[in-house]
Length: 263
Image (cartoon, rainbow, N blue to C red):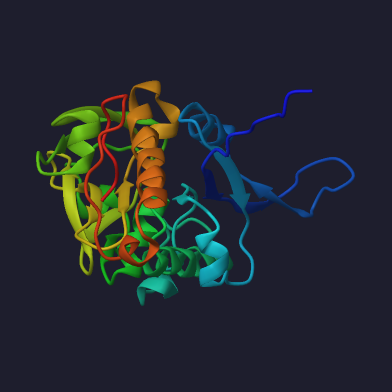
């Protein structure tokens, strides 16, 4: 009998929130919640999705077992995490999720595991690096289109010197669904895409372990698949490099699809 051969796909951890179940025998109990769009997009890029619920903090060794992490969208960050007071426009806070994802992001940065942040995920990365947020865009930046009520098409102007530009070009119509966004970007991140209103729509790591985060939802739009292709390319680059170099230097990678790897 011929020996069966298998190929290990990249394992990409994708964070999820919790929400009480509304009906059935388990009504009132919290469920781990994430839309299937993330799983589909990760699978289409040739990887496996590993859903991660808020829990006790993962160790460096545990995070390093993953090939990459996706910080998914969801509710607003807890104002306490920002050192600010609640606003009437805030969604209900999930402090446990905030703390878990912040620690997960920092551990990934420390261990060299690539990170893709989506919507809320961008906000987690920005705040974890010492930045700040617009708490309610209709008030703070009224020239930005209202996108908090439903998914809305907006145009992202992408810097040419970015991995995101290699993936999507210099301008891309994207699907946004948010009422908060990055105000100040600090630490190891730099802004690589903006809306015409000035709102940062994407950030990348300025060095060290690979990070890209977008203030839109690429999982909702097939034309944004190169964002996930780039994440998978970054996992392959990480496997090919000596581990001691992974967390200190990354080069853009252009996979066969023509999209970019993450820095």
